[in-house]
Amino acid sequence: MERTDAPGGLIRGLTTLRRARAHGILEVASHVGAARISIVEGLPVAVRMPDSRGDSLGDLLIREGALNRQAHERAFAAIPPRGPVGVWLARVGATSAPALAYVCRRQLEGRLRRLLLTEGIELHFVPGSADVGVPALQEPAPLGALLLGALRQLGKRRSLEEIAPRLSALGLTLTETGEALLEGAALWPAEQAMLVPLRAGASAEVILAAGAHSTRAMRLLWVLMEVEAVTATRGRGRAYRLLMRKRGEVRSAVGGRRLLDLPQTAGPAEARRALRKLARSLHPDRFHDAPLRSASEEVFGALLRAAAELGA
Image (tube, rainbow, N blue to C red; front, side, top):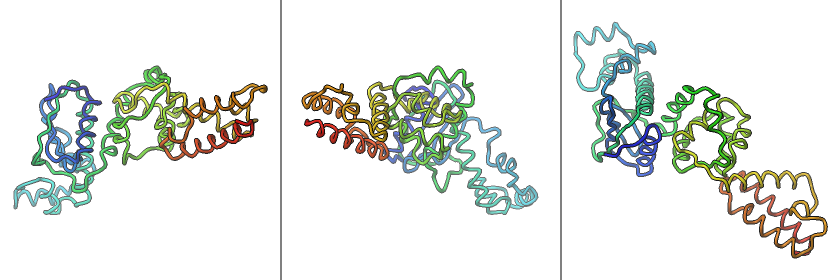
């Protein structure tokens, strides 16, 4: 078994299984006992916890007002439950199939959240049967959609005064784990706006500015840093800031020498050197996100024209 940190270690383990489209059981051991996560085609569909008090399907159905107690009592007296309790409840009319699917999703999300908050876990994946003895989602949800809600709870446990000092890295970029985590996740507009500079690599200040410095944006960026879904990088952050500056100059129709960062006395040879230097940071091949690549093509075309006008 592999000992790892939580929540980052569990997220990395789940995203690895997602990429491999694995099928089996992920065992999660900790000081509170052993949990078992059912993995089907790389996605978690059920979690069996060592302590399920308060989040059993019956508890959740009652909490949601989706359990017909009279039908449940009549059926229990006549036909005691056999097999999965949730399936039995739907069969005897004590709940509906849509309500059962909803609380199964809520149960899964809640149990994953508890595991993400558990310190000092050990992970061990057993390929093969994925049956952990509790009802599973019939329609698996995207991994990011399941995990992001739990991670948002982590962000809410910290005040903005605690979060702000962490958001001072000079350059940040989204990792492969981060891409997997956000795939299929529902994001607020401010959070979605942050992804463009985050994928390109930018300073936390620039990333948060894209998110209008909203509380949601700050908390999401902090959470991504906590679980190592972003990594610090200086160079790419500078490239993004340079690209945004040059695009502003292009749209302001500045002169060719200013666009190439040259003095007014610069000639063709200096223009060629300036173009090569800027191309190392601003060439379209450096940017894979569509909006940034489009901005790079606009800027790079203007740089080529400026250099040509100066005889380079």
